[in-house]
Image (cartoon, rainbow, N blue to C red; front, side, top):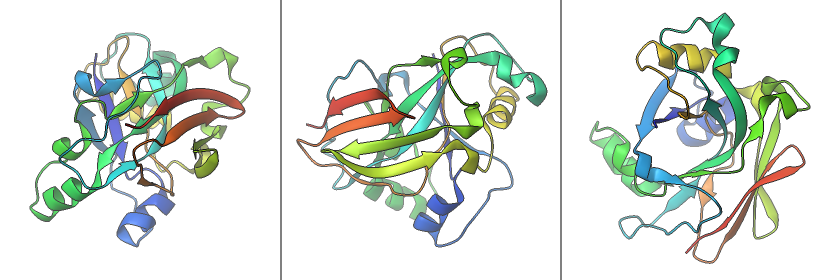
Length: 206
């Protein structure tokens, strides 16, 4: 099982981090180790190597069949369910790595950094995948909202693009990028992720 993630896929988030409504010439793709996956409401433990660990709330897509070099017009056939997930980022570590021109993996791919909620079958969605609202609550307060219509690169574009470089297999996950509103988590925080009006994610920070 592979975990793919997309950086800088919402313009307002790019402005939040880089002070510009930046769109990359092609999707920014990185991967996480399989040990990054955190499921079933298990707690997230803030690593001891970071002083600031940020939540990044994202729509997560589950791949359902084998595919390589998938045409964008057929990409919708290769995923069967979606959920809300958290791409945890050691922000201080990421800043240090970026300043040195180094990859992001240590800041993004560490154990437990890919939290994933309960998957909702695609056919059960009331809306098109590019018209889904999602949000994150921390301790009962909404801290981040997203609408998939705002993606710079749409889900089918991402599936097609990634499959040019990696063979997609059943069970692979794609974190499709985070909207504006990222911020740090703290010990004893309680996080809840919502897809439309359906709470699909809930866990505590330790």
